[in-house]
Length: 71
View 1 (tube, rainbow, N blue to C red):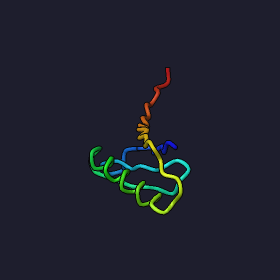
View 2 (view 1 turned 45 degrees about the vertical axis):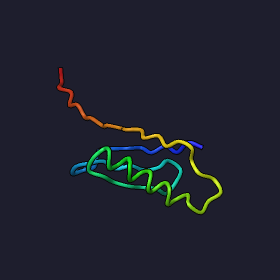
View 3 (view 1 turned 90 degrees about the vertical axis):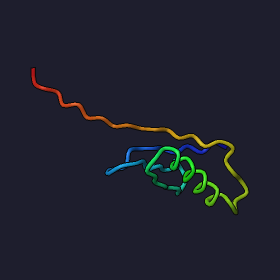
View 4 (view 1 turned 60 degrees about the vertical axis):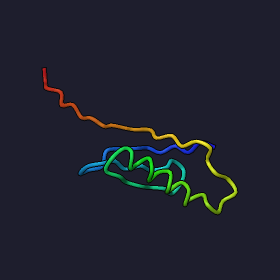
């Protein structure tokens, strides 16, 4: 099983990560801290379950709004 986290920039600073299809959410100031937090949250979420993910994918999504001037 592969667990996919959607990662976005936090509103103020750092990152927010949300697992797709599971109730797992974590935040961090740095990418390295986010990786550690994701692994910890995943471990806690699946600790008593019969299935544990073999892979965790961090899918970084960056939204950018570009104003378009009228021609």
